[in-house]
Image 1: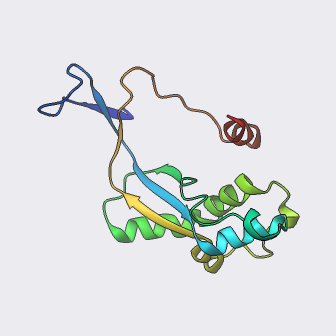
Image 2 (image 1 turned 90 degrees about the vertical axis):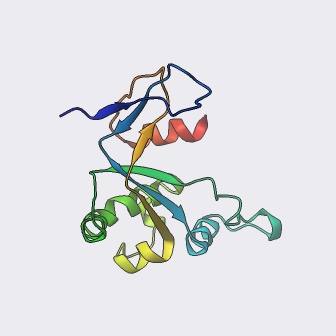
Length: 147
């Protein structure tokens, strides 16, 4: 089975001839909460206006492509199975030293630190670049942060 299928142009598209690719995936958008921001601020104590705010990092959402989910029950089961991986990734993006992390990475912390929004469809609008697959590692995350 192909990882994606091609969708025809939408009527009235400004980019005639472009082809969108419907990925064979659902997606999770993971957004930090105020509790997460408070944890980030606790890593390097600052004075007054130097603290990050939720507005400062509102654009720091991460999108995770996941297997297609067609029911809320399947989605909830998948998130319950993978929440530690997601929480680990989000914490590591801000602090590599695990000794600085909260002691327990549990479901309660996941829900306190992160808001998860689900999308049933993932569509690739880039009609020029092929989809590349890379293993996620610390070097890749640091490279993205420096750009």
